[in-house]
Image (spheres, rainbow, N blue to C red):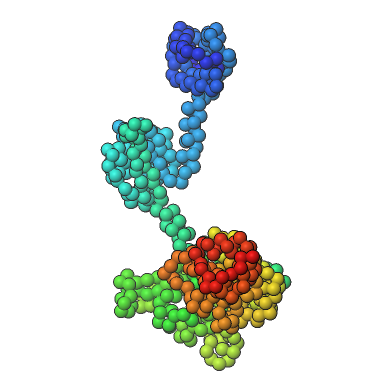
Length: 532
């Protein structure tokens, strides 16, 4: 029978020797011992098992009681190393990647639950096995034991639970002197890697909380869109250009919980032949210049997600007929193919045109109009929701500042008055352009009306700079371009100002700030200015 004890001694020389002799005298064998020194105390953890059947575990603590310096003694369930190993096991078994570790001889010392699932092994029976018995399919972990670089290895395993592909990364384990004492392999599921890559390459999901507004009409519209988001019915989003039709479509897709992706396509941007090949795909050899094995269309790519047909009113009549058939039959046929491919994607359409007038003129099919107009959404122009203008400006300023790592700026009261007086033909998109431009060009934290340059004012030039400065250089970093703009603004303002302090007031800067900026850019004015 074994016993585990936690003994606390006043620290001194010879504690372990005295304790070992006393345990041996009582015919107990030491299985494990740990010593931890804390301040002037020595904490000794020992596991011992008796060699004589008649001995009782309680005999041992009594026999140790008169060892010099012993302060306390108590029985414990686990030694610190055992608890540490248990916690490590919990951590490893909760890691999604497979982990296999071996010693210098190639015997498995550690394997977690994920690795056992990948290799179809019993976790309790693997420790102690030779790693060669695991049939990993290559010698990557053995190469690491030998100090050879193996790099990342792509493996395919066929197990009773199916075909499994994963990447294995192997590295040697070294001791404090740098000697190899083992190796570890980490296996990552290829499917998880693909999902991670997709999450990085795809735009972030948009939800209804990303739609900024306090206007009652917009709030009612959001409530209506949330209500119909979970249905499979076709939705037609109507609204002028720049009102946020795609934003609503993406929010509806997110709220629907559909497992497939959101797949947008601008029907007005592609010619008829290319539009159909993108929507429906094509088989190999369907036309010159196509991929040899063909290509799936966006309806197939969407799977059980959402296909967003933007500007559907500009779709050619021939393509309209094919889209109508997809909506009716819920299947597509690739160009050049004969097989019907079922689709489960939800369809959301959008247009900034007058579909009713287009039906009358014969440029839009009446049957398609009735098919997509089951659940219409009408997004009002910005001119009808001017009470949202301030919130939208704040949102765009915050977003830009976060992206550039700069302090958040604000629009002054006079600036907001100017914005509210504009009729906004470009709607929210135009407002974003105006606010972003002002945030970049205005050197002060508060943006006044002079830097809120509207479309019809662009020809007049931006305050403090020439028309030439407005042109961005895509070949240079944004910080370099912004510094150049700041320098040009300072030069032009200083040229017109009677003093440095007046230039500071014009730009909304403190006296010290403008002096620092003049020094930063090494500016020299053509005439002397009063520093005041």
